[in-house]
Length: 65
Image 1 (cartoon, one colour):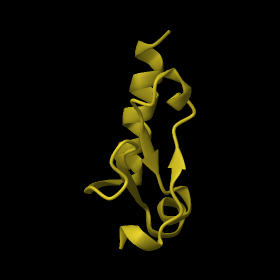
Image 2 (cartoon, one colour; image 1 turned 180 degrees about the vertical axis):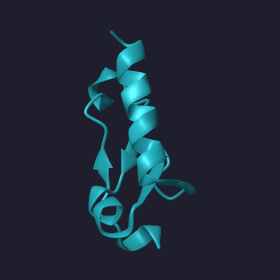
Image 3 (cartoon, one colour; image 1 turned 90 degrees about the vertical axis):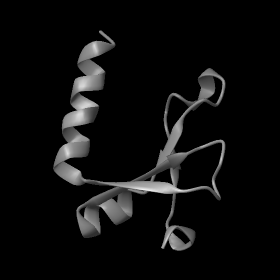
């Protein structure tokens, strides 16, 4: 599944490359957000339900303020 996805690197990747990638088109089409380590693109990916991922992102943003 993960080979055919179009992966997007986090906008924070310029901080040394310790970031994640995700596949937004798959998330929009399937309601599941695939996430993987940007340093290991051939490694495993995790899949999160879109509402839970949105909650996590909102929480992370609130913590970084």
